[in-house]
Amino acid sequence: MGHESKAKHRWETPSLILLGGLVGLFAAVMHNFYAAFRDAIPEGNPFVHVVSGVVIYVLTGALVLGLISTIRNWLMQDR
Image (tube, rainbow, N blue to C red; front, side, top):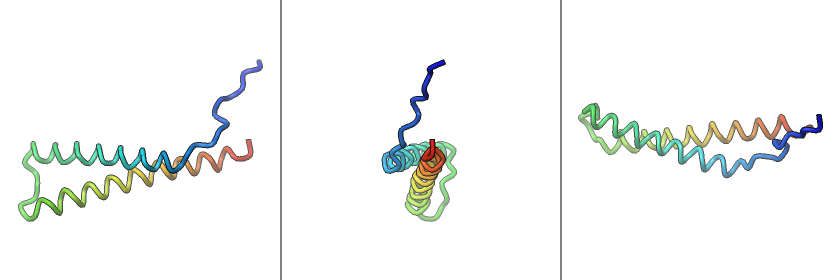
């Protein structure tokens, strides 16, 4: 029918890693707000709880979107 796919270009993995980190940061902030409103922050040092959660969420978001971009680019390289 003459319709060509516009998805032939490669995704920019570094940009998606940054986007994943930002999404993870947003999720970590929302998680910490929810824990604070629920009064579920541990009694020990709250700084450790907050920072460790932020680091885990940011790294996970960056890793997931980076892997998705890498796998997608790898699958589309022959097309």
